[in-house]
Image (cartoon, rainbow, N blue to C red; front, side, top):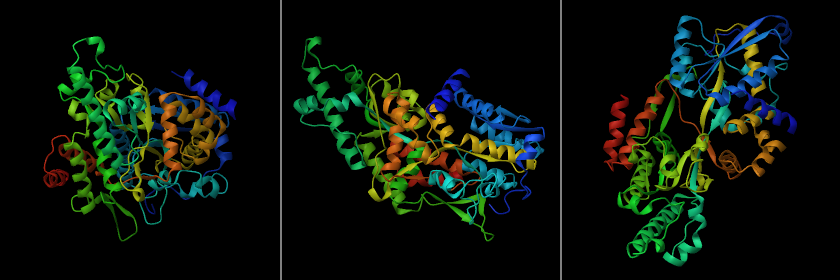
Length: 486
């Protein structure tokens, strides 16, 4: 096994809903697939690293199916890819398979263009056993079963990430000096209450450093730390915060879930199928949701927390790398952005508010099959999906790309555990942290999806930015978001 995954990684490096599907109930046979020339198209929006893995997986898969051709079509960007898929669906020329977010799938379901996977999953010849199916991480599976009361499968998980707390490990490791000089210590916060204490102590420390330096005339005697950056000027220019939070959209919905509140909800129609064109807004009326916004604004007013917008940036990793913040919450898929940091970077789970609501968002795409393909093309696509999602392949994919394995058994593979144990890269640190989410009882969540739900997220990102960065009136910010959503 170890040699197999090592070989995979080497090759990757070398490559620089009832009624919701229009397909027939018939499944083609493997014998037909092995003897009949068949071509399928896999449309994706990915960059080089993921494409290299897909190409490797394709090469291995085609050894068993020599009459099959798989075209990997790259359309840059998720939005452009979704537009291309919809245009081709309307024109009758859709690709065989693609990846997408739940709201993408909702738009495809409007025209009954997604092939439900239940018949493939349960088929005795080409499907999964109960044990194999339960090996997928539950939250990833559930995300694909939220479109009807029966829990029909519209897809399977493909590339998955979440969020983590990146922190300046050098700063936290200097506690002996902080306690001696300033009478306080810091620890990586597990809860938002600990976050408040840690942030207050961070400000005590950095202000103490600056105050000390003001009284020193000899430059050589000033307190300087290579891993803290130009703290004197950063504080003087109001360009320092204990923590930034990258994604306003993620922050908005995550903190609501952690407070036990409601963000949005699906509408179930009388035929027991989710309304894929409409949903219900909850955040503007839910008491807990509003409470979470007041809590965050209080942290912002104390100077503990802000967002990258304060520096006219889209991500906080830049500010972190140059010492303008000590902590940053960002995507686990973005670990490479911290490699240029002036400090040793540590990675930990995000803070939680309530031990009963340890929610963390799940991100990334799922893979689906379009229903207008032939039965033979659908079978080929299904078998290729199964091949890419074996425990060995999803582990190799994770190690090569930084995304997370989607099968529980992948986390137990010797190659993967050895990689975690012996690898000190930022990607390995991230994987150790995401493993903690599973070990420590965290709940991955995904919100209701319908055509246009991405717009709700966008407008809520505007709302939380005005609440945290601009300190705007919360009730007005939420109502303005509702008005923009329409």
